[in-house]
Length: 356
Ligand SMILES: Cc1ncc(COP(=O)(O)O)c(C=O)c1O
Image (tube, rainbow, N blue to C red; front, top):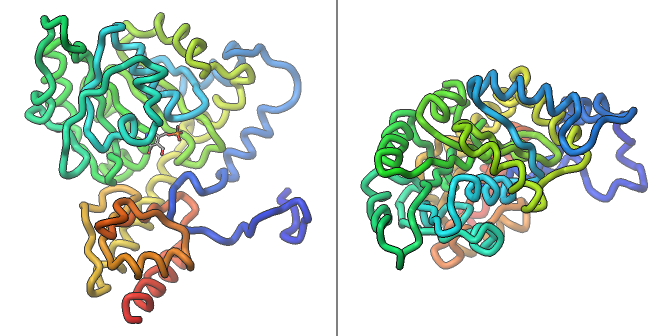
């Protein structure tokens, strides 16, 4: 039962939401209920529990019979462990310059994973075979870190999407050159919901070898999983996860959250809703003269350019981030719990601030 709003232990207003990040949202009530269900009694630690076992069945239902899930604490950890699992000590990762692994992980892939990142500038956060080729060379050159994996993000950090055919073409291109493909699926649910296809269509069916499967942005309290599709990396994963401090002892509480999202359609309901709110927001913003939408709104993010001082005034009313301070670019994220009223109030506030 929720404590009353006046409970002295509550330090925030549970009715206030903003557009800063899908990570600002709380835990979906069905995930909280699943956590309570998994509580009590003793279960074997470190992943030998009944919830993690069941998660394997659920994950195979989504990603095929060879898939194996390795629950971890967070998305950075998932990426760092997954990338190490498909590289040698001299290996390098080709990724978009805007990739989370490059700009938002404090250098963990380099410092913790020991990986060289070979980045490519992209206008929309997406790689293509041609862009990959700017870095895909020199496999025989001992002076250069060896490109061994291409890392894609779906949906991208700029709220755009790869089509399944685009991912297929990238996987074919990478595999022909002896490279593996990793997919950062921190927002994979938003991508599948928007494309209206099962997640497998643009992962295992398209040739992706290893995946960071998101849970947190989709309504979990915390927790993601590395999903190994190409079985070659399974043996490395087990040790790498522990070595990288991502092995939860009470793993049942990570697994049960992912199970709650993925076993039925909660993942899809949450993602569809967040995407729908972003579409509504984009529509509202398009009607405001002087505000430019910067990228196609294909998932749950809206990027826009507006006068800096307007952004600053608006930030006093709603939480969100500047993406590029100098240019006046902002990012507005919707979450599973964003309401139509939130969006409409935000658009009204934007109109007011633009008119001042
Ligand atoms: C594309 C992407 N990958 C991974 C992550 C996971 O990061 P964290 O380590 O904060 O869970 C995020 C979170 O913002 C993200 O946007």
